[in-house]
Structure formats: C-alpha cells, structure tokens
Image 1 (cartoon, rainbow, N blue to C red):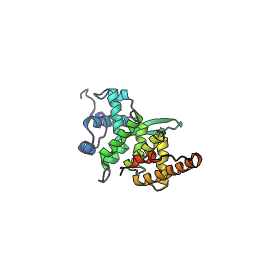
Image 2 (cartoon, rainbow, N blue to C red):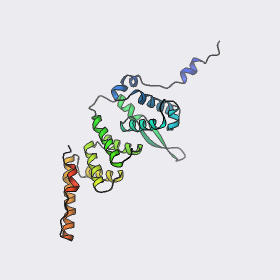
Image 3 (cartoon, rainbow, N blue to C red):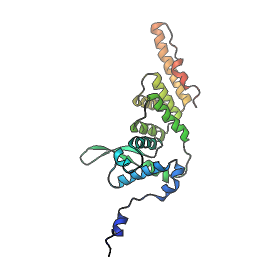
Image 4 (tube, rainbow, N blue to C red):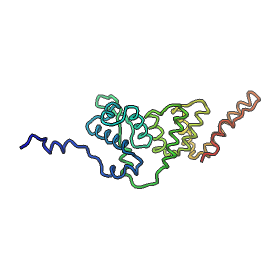
Length: 228
C-alpha cells in the first residue's frame, strides 16, 4: 500500500468534456482561449457554481479580468453562452451561465449557418450607435431576435435605425417595433420600408392639416434604402 491518492477518488473528481468539442471547436469558430474559458465555466457549473465571478475565472486563466469580460461578451455574441435567471426553493432569483447554446451547436444536425460576418456587423453597429459595449442581457436580446424570432440581421438593423431617427434609442422601443412588424406580417426590409413610409406619410398629412406646411418625411425612411 502506498500513501498515494486512490485512483477511484481521482476518477470521481473529473469533469466530462465531449470529445466532439475538442475535435470541432475550431470549426465552430472558437479559439483556444475561448475553449478553455468555456471549459472552466463548465467545470464550475459541474461543481455547483453556476455563475463564477470574473475573479474566480481569471484565477484559472492567463488573462486579466478586463480581457475575460470581453471574451464572455464575445462568446454570448457568437451564441456559445447565455445568462439565465434561476429561482430557488425560497423563491429567490439568481443569475446563471448556461452552455446549452454550445451543446446545441456541437450536436445539432448539419444545417445552413448564418454568415458570421453579417451577425458580427450587427453587434458592431449596435455598439457604435450606443457608444459603448452591449451588456450581456442586451446581447442575449439580440440573439433571441435572431434565433427564436428568426428575424434577419437586416430587419433588426432597420429597427435600430428607426429608433435612432425617432430619438428613442433603447431595446424596449426596438422590441416594440419588431413585434409590431411581426404582427403586421412584415418579414423583409422592403416591407418595413413601405410600412414606415406609410406611417410617416400619415403623420405628415396630420401635420399638414394643422399647419398647412407639409413635413419632409423622407428623413424617416431613406435610411432603409439599399438594405436587402
């Protein structure tokens, strides 16, 4: 007998990592540091820590907290990670990371993928308009529009620009626009352009009736020109 740790204990203290993840991570668009970060989150979740802090994550990585925060945002943007709210038995709410999007990408049947450059430019446009990085929940909102509502990046850009022109740059207003378009059966930028033109033409007509001076409505819908 030796004083070495029993092999049974060593084997019990393991984290299961799918072979497919190690084989396909580069094809999924992940690099090595992103892969290790996801594995560390997976390890934390397996150990019962569903929302490890930046300090906890960076203690196991070779990056600082600022870089780690940027990587987390990037992983959420790319659809590998999401943040959920969980309720415990005492009806208390807490945040938790979920790797379900990663597993879905890894094990889903082969299908036509969205062009990553198109999705990436969408997030870049949002950050340019807001003048700051998007929060994890804002990123998750955009991903919900893309993945659950099946909205095209071009249509989401249209809603963003409409909210900019109306001076109501917030996600709640954009969500109202997108839901209104969906209710009216609007699924393309061309349809959105026509609906927006009619709306603002109607507003201009009302303005003319009260001021006798017609308002130039082209400002409100020319931003849709050229979008496909």
